[in-house]
Structures are given as structure tokens and as C-alpha cells.
Image 1 (tube, protein in one colour):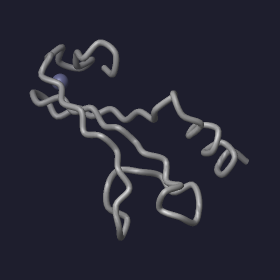
Image 2: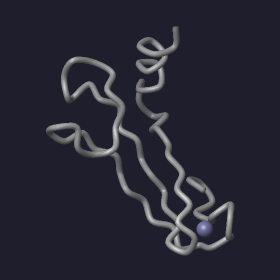
Image 3: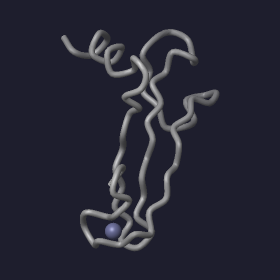
Length: 74
Ligand SMILES: [Zn+2]
């Protein structure tokens, strides 16, 4: 869905991207990975506007996955 921009459930191409963000008071789509807000790992969300299916992806161009593994992978 991230790469194809096609919904795997209903095959619609009506896909929108809601970018992850880390806002105050836990707002935005993210995973805490440290004490500070800026250390949060952002989670991008792809939403099918036809059937409502959503898929979530973490950016692989950063070291976010490594940081999550360090914090949660034990
Ligand atoms: Zn769909």
C-alpha cells in the first residue's frame, strides 16, 4: 500500500497519507522512544478512503527502527 498506493483489501486507488508527528500531550501518531518528544518515532499512516483500511509504516531512511529495537526488542 505504501509503494503501490493501491488498497490491498478493495483495490481502490483512493489512498491518502497521514504523516506521523509528535505533538504535545501525546498528540499525533508516534511511538515514544525516549524521554523527549523529539525522540519519538513517527508513524506514517496510509488510509483507504473507500473501505477504511489503514496501514502504518515507519520511515526506513532514519535510524528509527534501530532505536525501537533498542528500546522494545528485549
Ligand atoms: Zn480499501
